[in-house]
Image (cartoon, rainbow, N blue to C red; front, side, top):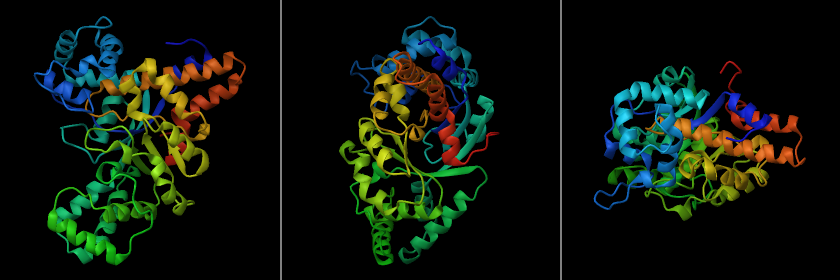
Length: 379
């Protein structure tokens, strides 16, 4: 960990994690742990383990001491200690180590038994808000049964109901996964939506029709809440070249002056995201799950590229932790260290005044998220 007043300030700062998920509540064997350690698949019999990757090495180096193990503990020893402590204590330790006071939790992705926002808040001794995933709302409407000509109204009503729940502060779309961003930016007509709904409802499955994804994005604008958009890095369900946020440029022109748009994760498109944040008032970004996947050593490099031209009021912190509580602790560590190194080096080179550096650190770690999501100082 670096030293200096900026690092000290970031170490003491209670973070606002503006995009994350719950953590698993049950025991995990090696196969289950490794499946959550990677955005890819596990390949039994291949001799390739997610422990032998940048994120796996970072877990063994930085997470092992939280479990009272020596740094670089072997994977088998690490997993045995984790099992000995049990999931409740493991989750408590890593959530405490993260030093996060507020979580904004995406509740739309639950293939595992994970904590609710309230459960996460209780485990962390913090406050949690909800982020509504709009694809999940649309798929719930379809599952309940709806006629094609009634889909648009039913989806809009369901979305309004979902965001009206207590504690909801934002909506999210995973359009990057379903269609990519190379979409017609215009709002679709009613006839287009009905025709697309007819095709999708007859086929079934996940929402993936480009017209209905466009309708979802425009419905997000109408709802008036901040919109989180997954961009860049994810599992092998995406087509990476179609998740470049620069593909949203025309849509951002059309939606200027409406809602904040939060670009999540971004790698390897953090520079494109920084450009969009620099030229569109409504655009903000984080580098999210990228930080724990590259590990604390490379976090600085990713943050440096993201911040080359990004206004400092536009960078937010997120962990995008899902399943493994380790990702809360590791994401926070990588963010504090990477941003601290960048700002402290500028102070030491007399390129940035210390009061400015401390202010920028507070903005990125907490205050920018409070401003965008209209969170009170009391969380």
